[in-house]
Structure formats: structure tokens, C-alpha cells
Image (cartoon, rainbow, N blue to C red; front, side, top):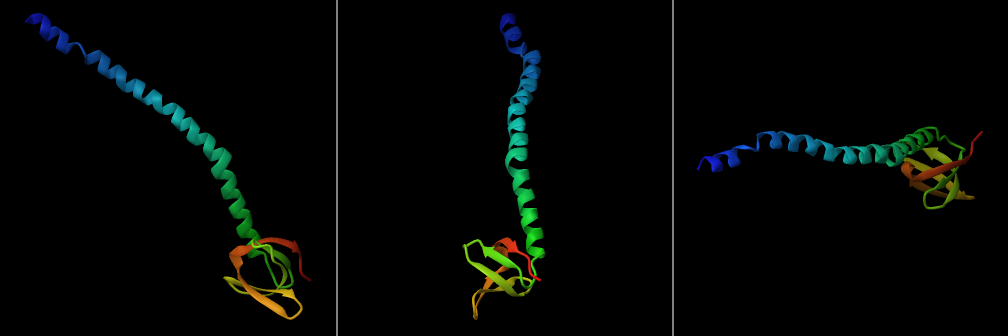
Length: 107
């Protein structure tokens, strides 16, 4: 019976080594997250910041393109809505967030 007791009690050193190997398995996952951050998340945040700055710089008279592809000139602007003239005497209100590009600065 003494042999059976020794066989059951021999796992002390092996259990500690198993925990160390568990942390080593997370290193590739951590590296993948770092790579995704620098390749996907950070550039997207940078682009969003530039778009927000562009939206705050829009003023009356600017020529713009909306995300729907409509070209026009800003005739009025508020916090959330921009009024653009797409043809003579034809004005459309669009949400400010849907302005994608400024193609010409106003006077």
C-alpha cells in the first residue's frame, strides 16, 4: 500500500510547471492583439479624428461631397445639420456627420 501513496503524492512539482506553461500559451494571443491594434484600431481612430476635425472646420460657402455622393455648396450650418445648395434655388438639409469631403473652400 505504500507504493500507492507515493504514486498519488508525486504531482507537486508538475502542477507548478503547468501553471507557467499556461501563461506562455497567452503570449501569442497578446501579440496578435498588439498587431491588430497597430494595423486596424489605431489607423481607424486616427481617421475618425481627422474626419471630426474636418467637420468642425466646415463653414458657409464651402463646396462639399456627402457620403451619398451629392455635391453642393454649404449655405447654412448648425450644430447637427448643414444646408447645402445642390442646384440653383434647390437646397437640401443633411446631417453634418454625412459630409465626407470638402472639395473647395468658401470665400
